[in-house]
Image 1: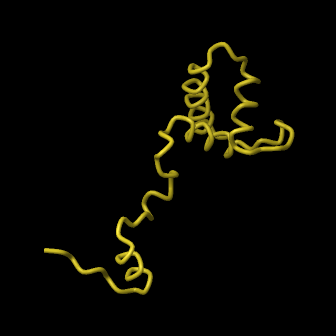
Image 2: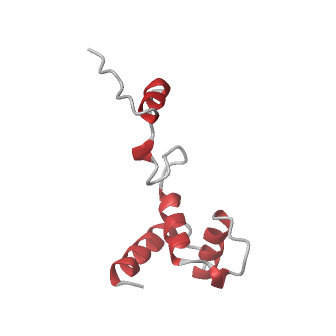
Length: 92
């Protein structure tokens, strides 16, 4: 794992673990794996899944999924027009 990813993982894990200081590190990791729907042995949990789930734990429950927010369209009609290659009209 690259150095910046290790630092990111440690920072996210620190923030998440501070919310449940009475749990051991393994208990926190098991909770994270369960929240991610990882039904296998915890040793098979990928770094990407761990980092993603830690990021999502820190977000509001109503927050959009990171990476998808940029693709959200507030207006359905504008989304259909854009999907058909027609730029939506600018309202004055």
